[in-house]
Image 1 (tube, rainbow, N blue to C red):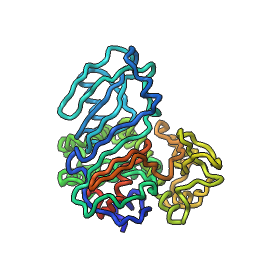
Image 2 (image 1 turned 60 degrees about the vertical axis):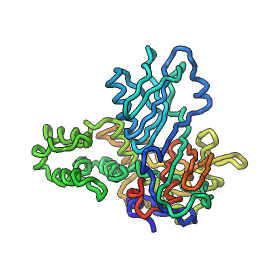
Image 3 (image 1 turned 120 degrees about the vertical axis):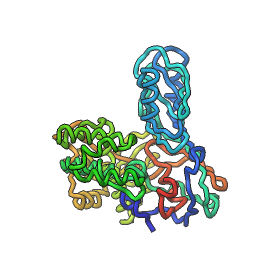
Image 4 (image 1 turned 180 degrees about the vertical axis):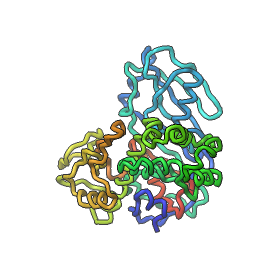
Length: 398
């Protein structure tokens, strides 16, 4: 049976026959380790010669953005990451300076450490990050992992983190923006509740569902609800929903749109699988990625990975999946042209393509521990949901 939260984020299938071992992840931060992988070319470009400083950021119980904000407050230097890592793991990733200059001295805090590893002639970019290696322990499971052998039969769904995990609302905010219902977007940001949210947060959100309470409850909003405070302040001062949304950092506003695109992608994958489409092998007429992640048409005899459209204003219709994708868009009352947002052009999204199936390498398991590597953009929790088949992914640590 598919958990309710899976359905909420567009996932309605399992693709493996494995019965699942249950259990929990992230009992301790040490149970979930993530190490960022960069290309050989990028590794070889790091030298001891002067240039753009490159660092290893190791952290736990803090996400990438908050860790880098802490580095900026301490040093006055803004560093850039190649990818985002969440707080519920021990993670190690590459970060770099976008400017030449004196490097930051190594330092550590309770939650993160920064160590210089060298310099590059030009700053590292997101394209240099090719994936992540995961080392995960599953606690309280009913069986060991040795009988699971279907790690290359898993669809490349977007995971729970993409949608807010315990509070799956990011895609709903994105949809409201696409439908130009900015009042609804503000209401979702401030008052959307989830059964997984804390009692304190739920009480505040229920109060904020009524605009008459904005002033009274502004100072009672918990510090961790920082985006809510930004929106609330703008609404109190200007009562302008577009202005309030524009006050949110641009990266997060874009993320709302991307989250909705991710929801459509998940629904498209689920629909195609249920329709009997072969999503693990490309065929003539398909759009594919090659081994270097370059997009192109299917070529016989070449190593390629099937790609599905990622809907945006330049949505490509000439694939075998257009019928199901178009049907989903009609049901959602959304069209590709909606992704060009005249009122907020900076968050418009062209769309593109995403690999249909997870490309998993270096898979090793022993008892209740598993290690594997995934290509950039794939989610470890999607592989784990097939291994564990949890009845409630959030309570299981997802």
